[in-house]
Length: 359
Image (cartoon, rainbow, N blue to C red; front, side, top):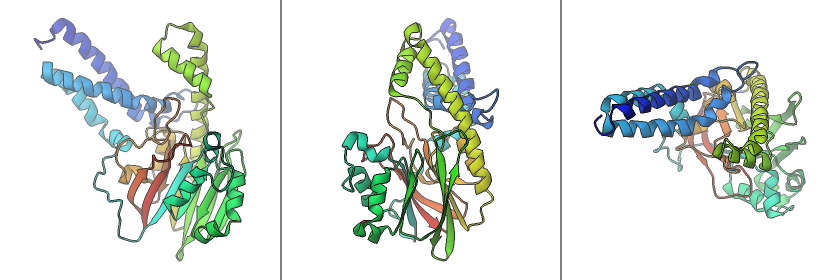
């Protein structure tokens, strides 16, 4: 206490308490449906990594200056432990070399197979080639390129690896490649949205696997708006970027409300699924501390939270680094190991890769 003095300690403690309360809200605000009066609640999870870091720095500060003050950040971390481990799981000893029988699946928003970066419209597309090299049993794609997928359907070599290839022709082009027979499929449309979901029934051995390959509502932000928003955050007194920041916030609030409706629509159907196994995967455009994530986490297991390690960033552009791509599975599927593959950067997303044991 003597090191910083009472005049400085108590104001700092007040700031710490405020940050602690905001951190708790960022962890649990998603229990409120982002529809109506509380659309910002589900967005509070976006601030989690920054608030957690500040709270942790306060813990270090108090331990060296005033140990009684350390009780505030310490208790806060305990209260936020479960959401923290959901956001940043610590499964260090989950082996990627599982020897027991398993299937490997990929969920990947390919951003049109990265054509804006690589300009390759053929089967030689490096991002599409990377998917094949990963050697998964099933790949569930969002924002796929129809031209390339159609060519893959008619390519003998690719068909020998993946005899079942298909695409839901919407604005977001949801596609799949499977080594197992696809015995049924249905497109699920979202009202007033260009996004959607592709429902598949896949025969794995003698059992049926139901897959909901989703692309939930996008945030509708362009690069210019995001740049101006960043400028506003750096300099809030600069009114030239204020209008853009308000538009960004408005789009985020509208999008999170739409995702809540879409997530509940898919969840209501998935929780009544009659297939033996269920997987819900795709680009959710929401973090592990969001309402959309919570809707599925109530009755399904998130494979990364159960068998991954670290923050697991899947979106990596515009200065935004979050895990917004997810794979959920029913309780009779055991996640053995889940990782994010960072080797291919032509898309603004990285793929989620899970090894799963079907019990």
